[in-house]
Image (cartoon, rainbow, N blue to C red; front, side, top):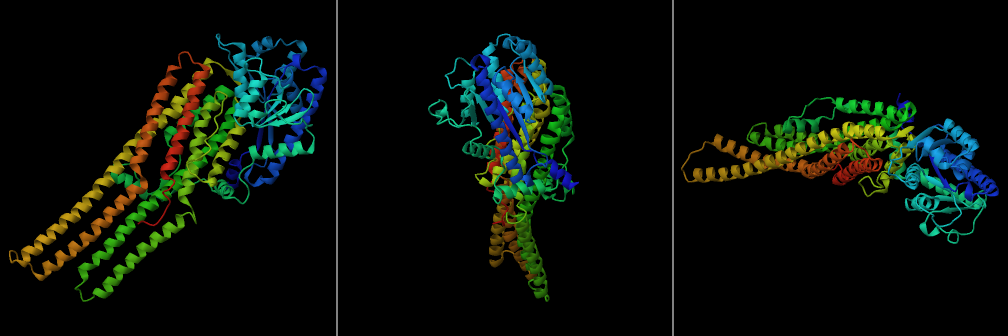
Length: 623
């Protein structure tokens, strides 16, 4: 069972190749032949490079052969040349049309032969996403929108381009420029068949690109291999990031544990439901949200699209979420236990004062010392076992939570044929965390765009999913986090102060009693004197120890800062909810896309800021 889950959590290596280029009016028959030859060589080189990555990193990738996809609008000319070459090479087609397919055929002015070719490609395409053109939208804007969608689903861009300046918006030159600005390498195929790799905006000219070469020349092939590895490969073998990635993938998904001490603290302070067995399964509302989302995904993009989301993104979210819960309970319960045990050790050491005058004081004291040593030994054992040199609960909690919180909101933009890249940091200034971004990107690559018409109905479905399946649950969570964090912080602060104040008052009381006794105002028997000394010693040492433990828990948990962060996120979520609901009447594709992107960014920012709060709170001995 564990092997099956581990295999499911390994992403399939996927290379997405976007295409843009000229139509037949700028590609004569000779040019089309040369472009076809160059394109096939380029695709062969990319296929070989992807296979090399698969062989080198097979231990962290799915066993299936790498999947190469061509993301195209199937326009006559460059797109169909690349589509034909891709199909011959066994690659998958993901089609993103700027308009409804009937309108697109008309705007392209396709003749019978071209239309037959177009429809033939649509039949074999894995997905076909049609953008519904708004009445006020210019034709060029539709091409620009589809071009940008194509770039969102591309790791590399193949551009069949003559190098001329842009003739208008949405053309090849603009798409090439935007690709380079977005950090997407561009393989430039000139109509004469020469090829060149563009990675900087200064190269977007014939002279700046250097001497053109044929795609099958060895130096160019090696260059493509380097680019593919840079875009797709996981962290290098032997690196700390690679070790953490393998550790994450190989960890079985936990179901429950006995790390209940942190939950017990919250039960004492805020009355949270408490059980000795901590279960990690998502609650009823979360499960209902995922069920609704699966139904909506099938409605939007078809069965294959919904299944891809369920088998990839959702399954990996479940593993990451369960691991994050497990390691957070282990880490938090341990630091709470450590401070509590440290205070208890002090108290036990002080309790022995009640037997100082006992005939058996030495063996009794030895018993208390033994108990104190046992508690300190338990603290050392827990800290060493859960520390970064062993189980590393702290880092694994933050990493798993980052994966879960980057994957879950990404499902929303997927519904509208869009994708948002994760932040390049997970909240820690540590190269060891590079695997988090790679893992999330690799998972999102597998999904691809949905099949269907991106019209007002689909946009309303996406809005409903965002509000009901994501925002409302996050609002409930963050509202609870604000209240519980503030109550925990306040309770720990108040009781810590009370214990120190009680120590102060006991000390004053002891001094007053001593003065009254020495002046003869009151008379104390020897028994009372010993009892008062013992109690004062216990209170004078024990209360500050317990108070310090409470302040230590408060400082490590940083509940006030976490609560303020939750409050900021809550305000942003409520604002986004209102704006999305306003779009239900007459949804704008551009506005809905922007709002869903902002929602994803908000949740990603929250994860990043939250991780920054806790990244320095490693599991250490209480001090």
